Amino acid sequence: MVNMPRVREQRRLVVISEAGSRGGAEEAAYRIAKESLRRGSRVTYIGPKGRDSTGLVEDYVTAGARYRRLPELPGGRVTGLVARAILTVALLVRERPTAVLVNLPWPTMSLGILLGCAVRGTPTAVVFHCVPPGLSYAGRSRRVYRWLATRRQRWICVSNGTRHILAGALDIPQQRISVLPNGIDIPHSVRTQDEAAALRRSLGWQPDCPVFLTVGRLDSAKGYPELLSAIRVVAQTHPHARFVWAGDGPCRSELEDRVKQWDLGGNVTLLGYRTDVRRLLRAADFFVFPSHFEAHPLAVLEAMAEGIPILASDIPGVTGILRSGVDAELFPPESVADLQASLLLVLEGGADMKAKADCARETVKQYDGETRYAAFVDFLESIER
Image 1: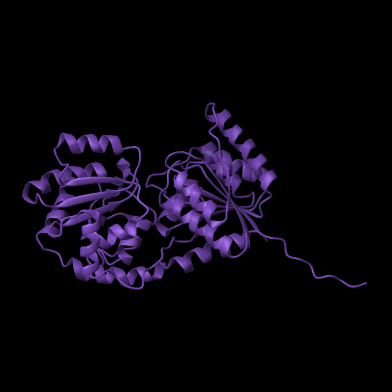
Image 2 (image 1 turned 180 degrees about the vertical axis):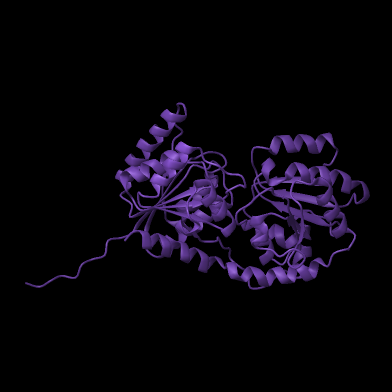
């Protein structure tokens, strides 16, 4: 009798996210899915479908993934949790994944999904993207999460700082949480002056106006209210300065109203969600990132890679990437006065921002996306065993 060689079963990855809009966490999960597809895995993306997530769903499908809509479920906290767990089990039975990637933009999201994965016993990687300082879990919640870790779930943070916070909140050793930073595609060259000038013309930006670009979800935790307050003062002495914001989110209407109220329409432009962030970066003079807390911000990595001078909050998620005074100009978070002073310092030529940008361009090379997301997929394949 001839023994036939055993055919290896195709890997089946399910990516689950409850996020209703596209941000850095969702972009990272999408890149992991693309790498899995490149290796021949079958990938299914399960997530909500709405105005802010349509583009993400389309990108998954275009890349070759299947899509299943994650419906909204009515009910209170407990009944909703149970309903989401039951739905998750049903989806996993249907998809039969060899591994699941649960994407958590916020650390307390998706507990029902995690419970469903645990009940099913499917190998699951849980990525905690943003873990704010002061995070705490009540006694019962802490016990639930610690039980989840016994049910073939592996937890990942994208920075050492967020791992430290999460381990403290759950009262577990840091070694039980893996660290896998996100990455980006690093261009081979930075913009030339002629390229920047041509891009500015195409975008309708005046050639002699300094342009400060900010990229991120329009949320108060991203520091937009403080930035707008600082702009209000800066515009009095530098009326030609332009501040361009690329992103969408829950605070957009409030920010637009305040721009009108303070008569800053000539200084501040809200573009909404953009797919051409690299193009915007290559046309801008500076990148401003006033967030209150971050884990491992992709927007900062992209600005570094494009060689754009950076002004950013002095917070753990940023200082894990940028060196203050070496790679960027950093300012204390949530301080309008300090942010205002940094903007004025840069506008008046008091900081050697070109040298800092050159240093940042070298620093970012360690976050090459191809290498980083390959490491994520290696991790997913290892937990299947």
